[in-house]
Length: 406
Image (cartoon, rainbow, N blue to C red; front, side, top):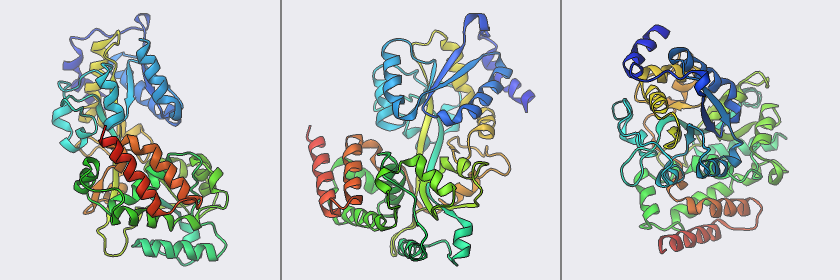
């Protein structure tokens, strides 16, 4: 494998100066502090092939956007950095911080238009190399399900019945809380939405052609509210990390979370057998699947090592590079490259299979970021019993109509 990758890179690297430690190192920014070991291993493999050393320098996820912007504004940003998709990622490009990737070898050849969509700015320029997608699942404790004679539910109504049966047995059905102020929207609600609307209908909501307080959205928020009785008693003070620990320790039967959590939940820290399934659709609705392009890798347009930055981006955009990446990235991140690069025994194939034949779409709010905080606030209010689904829909719709009117 190493020999083949070296040959594939030879033409690309032949004209580039190999950077020595004396000349400095490239740096890579990220919000994934949990991936230090895996990404460091990936970068070490790249250094073996090219002699170019890249140091991984992640920032706490909640501070990443602000920290990265400050670094870029101050001219001290990393040479490479994790890029968010759609509006948030495009904003950095529009301020001149990103290397334009249109002509990076492999970008147009190895990624579909759908994969590139989240990394394409309004002017048509590609601002990052697509890297990985994520989905959102209901994780379940297989032993608890078996002990209580529970099968994986096929509909949302069956899912609620499972929750009720577990609660009646004295078992906390779900360990989700609202303290983190992101996962209740990104994992729970956005995991539900493709069961109710198609991608085309999502665009209509984004454009204001459909109202966010119509009967469909009231139903979505009503079904969301039906989950509240099955959250932990102290859900208001439970964040995403605590919810994962609670599930991992067997203190709840299920957890609604992202595919990225699979590796940790199935790892050495916990002694449970983990299964997963998409949030099921209500009876009569077409089943959906939440598949979101999570992040790409961008180059800093102001890097002192522009050729080395472009060479690394080209490697990521190659099938050979993606194969190496797939071997070391945490389980649950789904490669966006248009090739089968999953290593043998990877969970990727099983996760992807769950979306086959379903209405797959990305997170609903990602082209409507002005709604992010208002929706979280309304979801939290529903959970606390301070708001009705109808009232929440009215607030969300009014907020978006005001945004569109600007």
